[in-house]
Picture 1 (cartoon, rainbow, N blue to C red):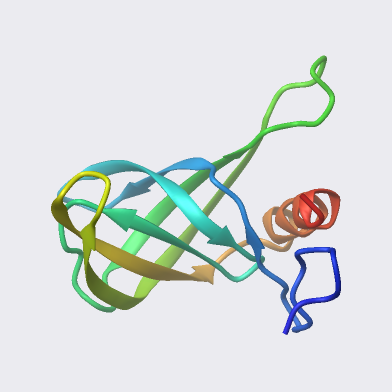
Picture 2: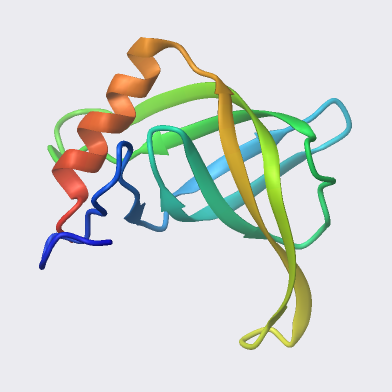
Length: 124
């Protein structure tokens, strides 16, 4: 359920629909992708190659700073793939995978960076 006109959901860890580039890393590969939505406990995205359910990933997110004079905020954590859906990309005409990643290992300081960003950008 969303709050009226804010774009923030009424849940313990609200999500925002935001397109942010980020890196997914495993022992075997590195993928740069773009978020579909983001919360303090996870992120969803679409990728070209399937990543198996419960795969452990290193996540590096760059959160753009609203103050152009300051640097972007970097958030690093580990996560696991908790959902994998095969989808047809209408714009590209190819099969891709919509995945959801749960942040299984994230320092409180990193979670606070995400929380602050979500609060500042939730009504966009």
